[in-house]
Image (cartoon, rainbow, N blue to C red):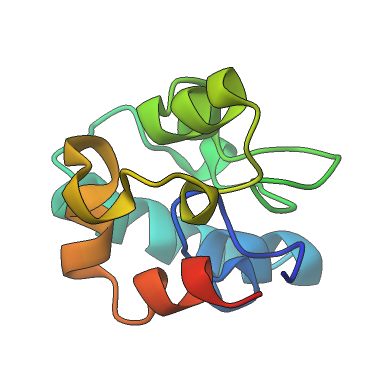
Length: 111
């Protein structure tokens, strides 16, 4: 599995936070923060939190990653991603991502 597939199946290489961090693109960070504040009804998302090298890699993480229930569950069970869990198809925790992020489930099942 690619290291830049997040615990939930999001492809970090195509994530605006990752892209903005790698490119040191403050304009994209600003646009991403604004978009995500609205999308996730999360006023705590700021330009400063849009820094991420990927969920499962070393380095800086998006501010929410430290509180992410999906990431906590995966690490608690000793898995790499939700794709390692036999409860994937019925899981309430990752279900939102699988339903709303095209390709997330396929990324989790790709070995």
